[in-house]
Length: 431
Ligand code: ZN
Image 1 (tube, rainbow, N blue to C red):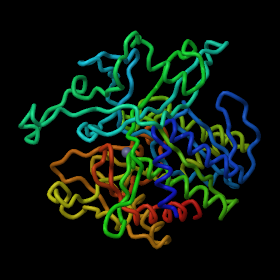
Image 2 (tube, rainbow, N blue to C red):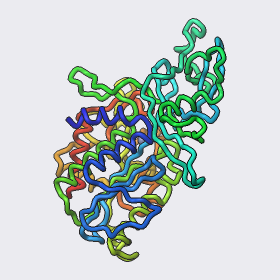
Image 3 (spheres, rainbow, N blue to C red):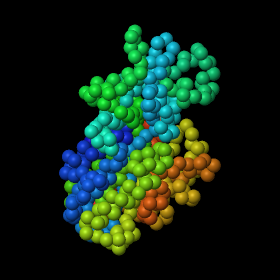
Image 4 (cartoon, protein in one colour):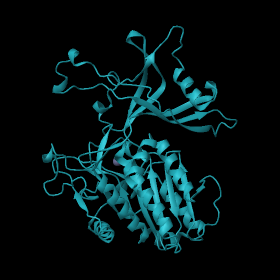
């Protein structure tokens, strides 16, 4: 049930904008109400359920606790995934009368995995309005297969399988079709968007558009134990956090601590935007909440000191073909439970204290837990937790589900780990 729900969530969440739209839809259906940072907030009562959207691509949902100093229980994840973004004035002629779209790489995708797949476009289109400071934003998902990045035939490069460096500008341009007689290439994409949005092409001022593969998610393996899908990093954790929050809202309408789900954007490019974890966006939401619950700076500082964050971003599971890439004693296996990620140089926020907290939560939930540390000769990644602590000095743990092929166009994770993680998150929110 939860697995089926994850697959449809992944299929509908084709980019950060549609992901946030889907999170918001589910929050609204569960009785959460929208608050706007640019407007006055109402007096917030214990147990009230609200959310704030930032830049259409980040969302912060909370259930107000009934003890203002008891603190925040936060689960954070990110809405963005590596992909290709469409450049302005993207129409480009190609050989044989082909029309291509000029794109730019977003984050760190494995380029090879994007070849020869039916691709579509999703994102945000911004339209003219009467108020120059406030244009109209529309979220769009064309859904139809529309583009393909064709690979060069092996006959033109016999050594392709011996390693083939790729140029992001030359090799990765998607083809949109043929330019027909008398067809203007300039503005063609805008016309396609205008048709989809039923607006005049002249009203479209700009867009943030991502390419995405249209093939649906599915289960694979002898016992259907694997999830094969795009954007598992990190929408699997967004889905787990959201599912847990909604279950917890029903199980325990009132709690001393405020429960928070924080979905940031731009983790894949270093989090350095107003909607990213390096900005004060979550801190601002927490402060506004404290004030509208009737608190002051002193109650807020007590609340922060009593808080705990689970920074949820998937980790690397042991790859059956590359065992030597992993740490000799800390190599999580797919299907054997969520992973606590730690790093001696503090790339993760985990320490012995916060790891102990997460272990006890998993114990209580009856969930096995694994550990991940980088092989000492391999430089690892970083994630939300340690970046966020430059804004708020929170206690917290970095964790995630183990997965294969992180940043591939199509990634693999385990069904069991998702079920375990939702259970652990629900236990955390219900503590
Ligand atoms: Zn991630």
